[in-house]
Image (cartoon, rainbow, N blue to C red; front, side, top):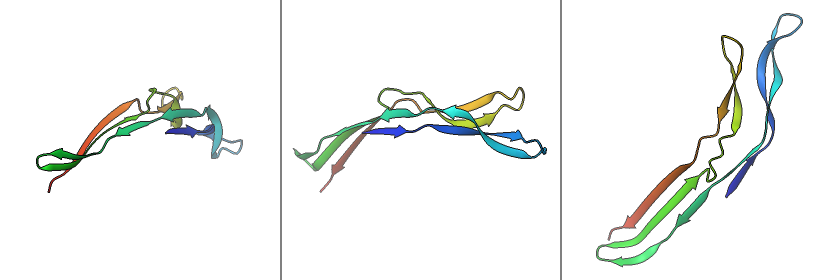
Length: 100
């Protein structure tokens, strides 16, 4: 499963000629692609007191894409732009079972 987020612009607050604060599209943020992988298996009768055991594994952001995802504003001192980045790779393991 994959997800594409297209190009957009980060808004920056600036002052226009009249001295009013306005927002402008100042910082271009490029598109990015992330991929997720999910695997699971259902075991219908494992024996004993458990039934329908389902182990599963999910890996989010499979290729560890750390692209810039959004504009976060400017520093209060120096006015340098700040950005949000995509969260790194994460791995989740899940196990469910039915008890009679």
